[in-house]
Image (cartoon, rainbow, N blue to C red):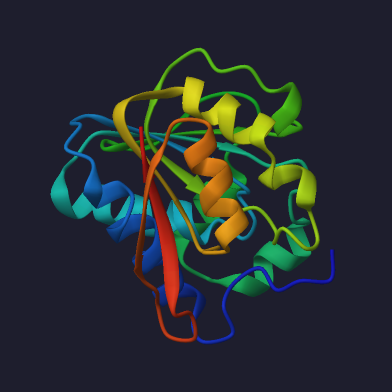
Length: 191
């Protein structure tokens, strides 16, 4: 799509700020179930795995990605064994990565995906609305709202007014939070 997979100001910091701190840590669910829209480089899953291990918090992590990275690109991203294990996990079936982290990667279009559980946190990390406008639609956010548990949170790096209004139109309570370096604000929406 011609876009970066992570912030040029520091993808790790962005992942921690937008998704782990504002999403994963904002839910009191324990165990916690996370749904990520856009697995990409796997960085959000990796940072969530590290936090789950540190907190000894059982975490189920499901991700939907229609365009997974190829093995060569993944090999260039990190030599960390846990990071690589996330990428080696098979698609379309649950994999226990650690005592506190179970991963299910789904190679499917979000519009076609059906969910058999509810989620406590949703990481909405699709490409930008300018590049993938269909991912930021009312239909998508309605589908996610229905898949979330009561008081679950959805976080995204995108703080555009039309995204905020679309989230509100399906029933979310939305707040702007300070963003990571290079990003003034992010959004967190609560069901």
